Length: 190
Length: 397
Image (cartoon, rainbow over all chains, first blue to last red):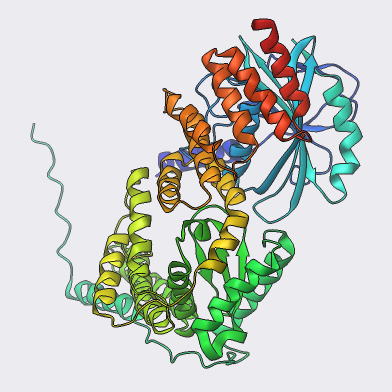
């Protein structure tokens, strides 16, 4: 009986630990490396948590605004690996910027977003390497209007890498826009 | 050495057997919850009733939807669907509020308070107003027959009975509560399937009595079955499914249509004009779902109908271009070239053709396609990117 109790306690502790997410503050002035791909200057004291594909940052709360860094998506893999539709499109090494926009739209759709409008797809550079940027608006699953921007880098060795900023259109997008732009402007490829 | 013999558990006592039988009977009886009288036009539930609570919850959901931005901001489209509601619902018309929401996939829903939601993906799949009326008639039937509240009460009563059963059996030494809850859930779902059957039959009567073609009802289900077959979906467990199988619904509606002496008299020009206005946007939304096999079935049907040919062929090309399982992209190229022969083709067909040809190494034609895109859509907001592609191609030519 005692052994059974210990087992239950152990399982409960494991379950609780598995459910915990560590949130840490990113030092604003120190260069920060993400996923072995990006190096950035945070500029602001963002709160960060790691994901299986990179990191997510926020100032006021992940539901209000967030920067997400998705790194090293390999050929044949989806952008994120959890909670996705089995039919979620996957990244292919021969994709270009326009294809990645379609892939990102599919990611938003599979996350319950609707009325996705992408705009202003344009060339960009990161550490002298060809990259791209685009903006979007959409409504999330709860009907909240969202606005976002994405910087993408396709690298022959490190696959697809994205740095994104998304926030509620009302108030929050503009509130942290300068901080997000500063992070994106500081992006370097490791 | 002979291992110790483990004593057999005692045979269930008479008390236990009686408890088990009573519990099962109680759980089954709880789900039987008698049908309610149909809702009278303008009738609202008593303020202290369960039904009033459900109405309150759905009033809030309706308010949220109205402010969410999901409702398609086209007053003509919204008025059109509401007109069909009124044609079918007669004196209930002013108590049912329909909203067409922009959302891919085949779905519509009806709340007990008269709040009806119709997804754009459903409209996209309807070939005519008669098929749309089939769905709207079905949803009106749920409202009039008060299915939501009946299902809610059945669920509440069944789960309560299952919990009582669980406590009683546990007390008797054999905890069977988990099985009872599963059984209760299955029974509620069976109850739900009966409601769907009832709504199908009543919806059919509403549509066929109001000038809609009876044969449209089974045709809609036949189309959905074709989509489902293309997707090779796993069939839901029949015990836990909330809806009857599509095949059964199609068969029932076919029999009703064959026995009907009604004929369709509806002019579909208003339907087609509104669908043509939104079809490209709704197809774009479907494309983002990534369910390419199902989407191809929808597009093949549109292609056969000859409506919006440029849009249809463009999205066929897009499905084939984006589907990673389609390795040979020649068919996608052919579909896009075909799309470009029609006046209603979206400018993006040039861009997609350029992307495909670029990937195939046909740099000169890819550049031409990108240049055509910019010529047709000089204000394209991805102009800088396309010019970048062209510049890169020039260095390869």
